Length: 210
Image (tube, rainbow, N blue to C red):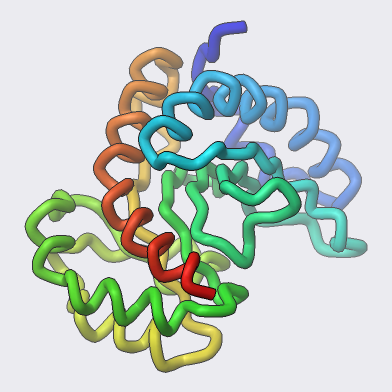
């Protein structure tokens, strides 16, 4: 089945009150789209990265009271989980969609990865478009464009602070036209993943030391 894009209703999911009602909407509206996107992208991403990638769709299983403010899908070389590994994400808040290469606090060897990024910081700054954005906390909506970011300082924080994170990629406002065009969106995501793959490979070379 071809991916036909996201609708306003998908983003409105996060205004639904109550855990059960919101989770029902996530399962009915968004997760089938995530599966279709995953089916469309996973082979290309595996070829790009050189790893057989696996699709993980967030289930929010640990939540018992508060409904999630966002939801996401992840691509990772590990079949059992993704949070302790470098991974690619696509997900939604109520006001935007994000496409990330994600390094979150559960990484066991993020210090070594940060050192690798710092060692290659000129390559990163010269190859990643300045309109790409960086987040230092996956729980927050905030992100800063590379143009406005002190990348060295951010990577040092990622290295030195236990709970620090580093996510790099793109944001799409909920009303952006490309989100309604499934083919155009998938092409944009493929290009984004391709742009970010050199960073991923840097981190994987360090990850495999462990």
